[in-house]
Amino acid sequence: MSICASSSPGVSRSSATTEEQARRRLDYLLSKIASKAPAPASGSAAAAVAATAAALVQKVALLSRKHWPEADDIHRRAEELRLHSEELIERDSMAYLAYVDAVRSGADVGAAEAATVDIPLDIVKAAAEVAVLAERSVSQGNPKLRADAVVAGMLASAAADSAAFLVGVNLGETDDARLDEAQRLAREASARLRSPGARGSSGGPGRG
Image 1 (tube, rainbow, N blue to C red):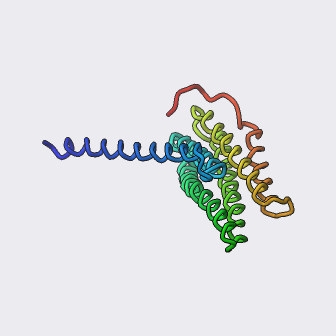
Image 2: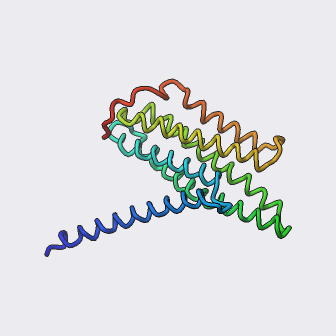
Image 3: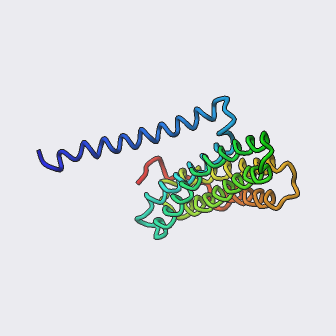
């Protein structure tokens, strides 16, 4: 048996294993969000939506390389934002649990409380930047994937708006620069959906 013939099944099994692991991670996250556990909850959900939006931008960029000189740069930055957003899923959950423990023990409550604001703000920032990339993907990317780029912008805007709301909830007051920043970024992300060319024909269902 040739080396090529013997290696193909291994590659196929490796790919299948990777996909199965990814499915399990998603299943685990959704089942935990749906459970009675205090975390993960809305913050982690917002981060997951931001990560999904970034993944869509990656897809558009990958399939736009033939006619979009900046496609590789867009893909690279979208991947960074996706991975960062994936990290924020876990960090938001850990921050809330740490805050609960701090309140119970009375130790380092201020620092723990700050994290419950700073991490949602990081989610807003990531989602807002994804919205920028999505807008560029709509106007410059493969016309056949316009719908994917538009939906990426919609998801990014929703994630930014949701996380900005959580910043306000966790602050418990409006007189804070972090809330101002979060709300500004969320508004800007939403405004990108209404920019010229942000919507329109997807160019048909085909891709590539």
